[in-house]
Length: 162
Image 1 (spheres, rainbow, N blue to C red):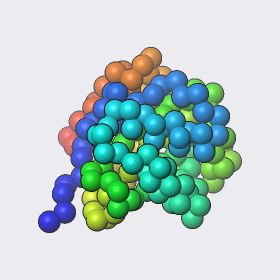
Image 2 (image 1 turned 135 degrees about the vertical axis):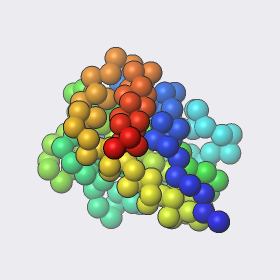
Image 3 (image 1 turned 60 degrees about the vertical axis):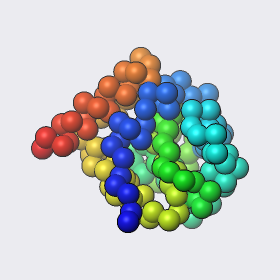
Image 4 (image 1 turned 180 degrees about the vertical axis):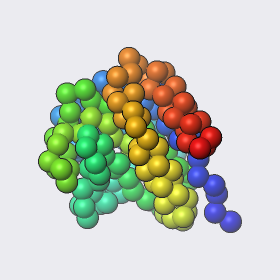
């Protein structure tokens, strides 16, 4: 039986939010976020497989989905559970996004290949919260990971209340 999608607050805990990413291009951003997951995840996390699944997905089509936002994601047989991380850059990251604009917020989602429905439902949850006015601005304005995480909680609560 497939598992339920995680709440966004659980998928993106404060220790997996970096409000001052150093990356200036998407490839180094992928490395930075995969490493963040590896540093805060389970001991069995396969860094190279995680990075490969994100790069493979990105080669199909840019995950720069809307003004200032990207959702790099991928599925891998090496993952036993879903992992997420957020990278925030106030100056923006060169991402080859559809709109040609730099990305300020990237939501990385890594999922086990055996759970494609959960992966899709999680992407849908994220799309719904991204449609809420002020959400991305609140993340970009956050002074640190804890404040960004509180913004996710607040907007997720508003979404579930509507």
